[in-house]
Amino acid sequence: MIQNEPEINVAVLQNYSEALITLNRSFALPDGRALDGRLSVDMENGLLRLQDAAGKEIIRQREVRLAATPGASFTLSNVKIGIDFHWERIQEQSFRGDVRLAAASASSFHLMNIIPLEDYLESVISSEMSAEAPLEFLKAQAITARSWLVSMLAKKKTARSLTQIKTENEINVWQDVNDHEGFDVCADDHCQRYQGITRIISENVREAINQTRGTFLVYDGKICDARYYKCCGGQTDIFTSAWEEKNYDYLSNVSDDIDYRAPVRSESDAKRWLTGRPRAYCNTQDTVLLKTILPAFDQETSDFYRWQVVYERRELEDILRKKSGIDFGNLLNIEALERGPSGRISRLEIEGSKRTVMVGKELEIRRWLSNSHLLSSAFVIHAERDVAGQIRRFVFNGGGWGHGVGLCQIGAAVMASKGFKAEEILSHYFTGANLKKLYD
Image 1: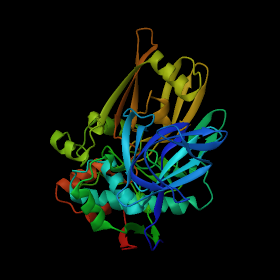
Image 2: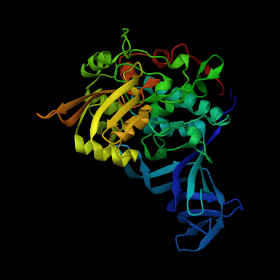
Image 3: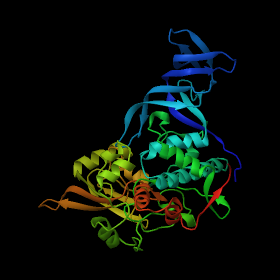
């Protein structure tokens, strides 16, 4: 396990062909030259080209690092966040720390922010949830995010695990950050939201970071791969529902309630669970509370605990053709083959007049069945038929928001609002894990 605070290499822009950077105060090139003001970056003949506001070339090479002087920051325009999700949008964002530019191909580059872990976490906590959320929740979120990141960095040093299985009739795909090369993490939902100092960083956030500095979730002598998401829908899920075929004891199924509730084990369980509205910490419609815990763009998603999506048959056929690349013909049936304990589907069979394909895991299912992504793969499907018995439309009744493994952010925030301490929140969601301070 680590003993010192690491530096994190965060890709804010990936595979861009050009970008504008505004240096607020002075940055230093490796040769000692000072830079500030507006710069442009593009690619020419496989090399990065950095130019000043007047169009004068400053440097041309495959990689360059701009070192921040004390108090300096940089600003980027046209940063895309929530990529491919329903909250996708463009923002202007500002960051502390160094800038690293590196060619990714002959015509594109990555722009990275190099920053100490604890400074990075200030932004992550303020980007993932509202900086005005209860302190005990922010402390729990900080420990969870810190643990996941350092566990992931250790995992990246090991052999890359298989992330897909594809045959003629089965497509089983999952994503993990070992996909990334040349940097530690991306700045979007694929890894952790990181929107720099653009987000409001409150005293609550700084206090949460300071009080938990260097503190990690630990199980059996290792830092926990501590996952999190927005809303479990009443039950958390297990690792194998979303990723490779392995499970962790500390990522067990738990009820998002003070009382135990039996996990989903059958299709009749799933229907009863997902068409009902059982009590749970994350089952809240308190708009005042939600405004204090969710960022503004997440507040646009109001029906997250239980939700419904309705597609005309032809509409869903078009979506599937576009998102999967497969022409199923006329849809005949959609059936869950395997579910996790929260009701999330990890294997789904789609039967059409031309093809029948099994798709997994949860994120790929969500991607195939929506122009963006379904909120979760915890859903039951009802096919409505016309008088001739032909399917007219599909109704999806679902629950939760995200993969459902580990910390339920809305549930944890509600727990904090009810007086639970960070340690109690974390012990609820991460079974048997302990807290350990690894550096000051």
